[in-house]
Image: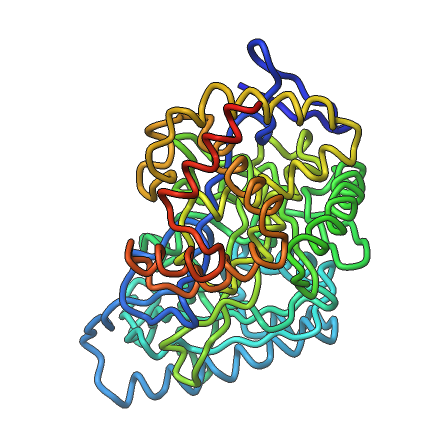
Length: 445
């Protein structure tokens, strides 16, 4: 497999160099339309939204549920205020004194959240889920789904929602937080964890970038922040879209990555995971407000500007929608990555790779790489073939035309007829003529 080293030099396999990402390529799924509706637990890959299923039934009556709602809300408001004002005793005052492990975890979470530099934090009970009785904690103990809304100063344009499972119990007329994992069996809560839940962290900041790494890895965090900054100009100049800022998560704990974040059957080296914010007061729909980039633990000391250029491109384009064909989604991100590679001293290698793909892969092209079987026809070359297509489009039609094509295709619908219509609208040619032009260019390579 191909690797990208920490200083930007690439190691290749075979007779020519490859230009993908740190050993494995990345498939990042973009956002669907304007909002995500709360319809089930099945959302995954690319940073799925804080989903909720059909509300579960409980044996508790309305008075008990109303009591947990009011009691939990008061505790959550106090905790949010405590984090924003830096008051640890207030954060812990309603945590079960007998649960020392919970209090230790909470103390670490508090310290981690303070390091992030939050401009906003709030919690709300997710009313799409009914409280679940937790008799092991006493007669009036209920597990509830909680939405945690986190906004990092200088990074997030809106609060990002993440789901928690908290258990509250009434003791002596007072509601206490007594556990934080009674809903851990739920698939969408157990797949991965937020970085502040994974032990002590360190952070590195640059304008528009915040990198979170494990405590003790500050030097690597600073390196990643520098590399991220070096990736930003080419992403912004190509996409012509600006995200307020970007959070990069590079933790050692494997729970920082959802196991379903894969590419071609392999764990992704990194993924642009979508940020969701509630689109209505009931939190029954969510809108995409940006992305964070999560680096696989095995790649955190190897990741560099080229990886970030690829993933930051996904992050910039994801709010447009998820209906763009995969050849355009991945080809566009690889095009930006290769632009940065050329600027970083690898123009000769990039030109060689382009000629080889035009000579060896494009002549066999029958249809544009198809969603669902992206890796099937060309395996690792799927990204290279898609890059050649986008590179040809930019060279022939200009960057503005390609960006407009992307924006309209991303809105969908993603039917063959609509895609053909949009191609003809922006490029004045359909898929067949486009493939013929690519093959002609390949013959001249």
